[in-house]
Image (cartoon, rainbow, N blue to C red):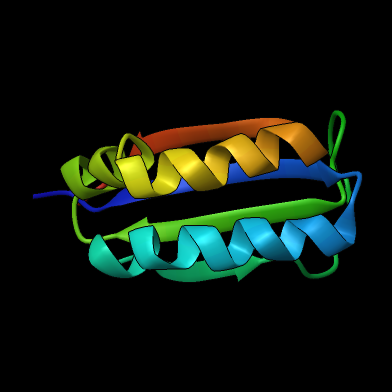
Length: 97
């Protein structure tokens, strides 16, 4: 079974409230076996537009990645994030080759 990944590109407008998002999302991540591969850090736009905060989260399976995103626990966190930031989050299946 292939791993699943979230790829997030975020512009945070309220860094203090973003901390509430992180603490609210953490139980959902833990429940679904998430592991952060990229969390913030230096970014350079090699092509196209970029955002200041970029995140890549690995899950044991694509199904686990979807389940986390669609969980009630993450829905509460997502509502906070959507109020205080702009961005994109995609869920993508990994490549086993």
